Image (tube, rainbow, N blue to C red):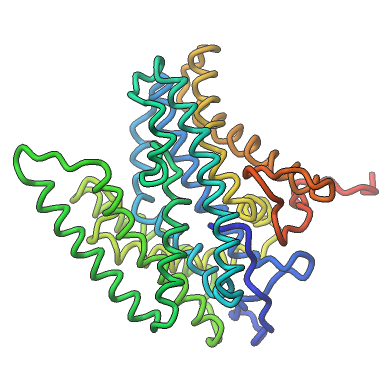
Length: 388
């Protein structure tokens, strides 16, 4: 989801009805449409899931089917987002150590620190309402432990980029095998302690389990990107990924019925990879349509929206429920998602538009390098000079 980079252009390999060049880019802004669209879809799933969590926090209630529906995407959401981030590793490694780490510090580490401090402040301020236990010491502990919420994603990505740089001389397949071996060993150790009587595993150990589980998906994205550089991709018809998504939902429902939780479980690794493959094919076909532009627009600012949406979405749910007294769970979720996305998108757009003035960016410092001036999706713009 590291939205600050674009994959370099590659020449089209072949044209045809069933052949899609997965590395072709928009000549106007050198963005790969299907990747942006897929990133936007993955981000939308995350924001909806967060909105479903915030409504009960605000005192609202939701139909059970909403939570059951979002649970179907538990095995897919974060592995897909990490996989897409891993696809940007190769182009970054080509820049050399200095630009590599300078870019990751500016686009991941600095935003993580600035926004983590902001969210810690928010948690402390709302603690009397939520009943949570927060202290000013969290300003210091964010260097070793991400704050409650969603900022762990940036923290993990920065570490993943560091690990992959350190292992760049090794065959990525070897790194992948080792990563899965570590994830398996950590999961076995975590599970054995988890089921011991009178022992409650601390949250930090769950974060370690999550870190080890998602690392192989980051490496897998890098391997897939390297494969695309050499392979000629011929996709089946659009019906195939649509059917595949239906199969994924069926398998996910069956696994969730058996295990009760689809987050970061080794038993769900095959279905996660299957879901990623189907979503890539679906996005490859969907990305050819002009109706993919709104989703691609969201995807190109995915990092900024991911960072900011949490506060806007939670504030919207709290305001609508506790101030306006709205009880409809559907209205609360829909409004929180829409307002959260709209407010999150407004800041990076203004920051990019002020680049020439040298003002500080939405992420807390520096401008967005390599970003073209954002354009609203054409399907959202009414053309001028239309007849009648």
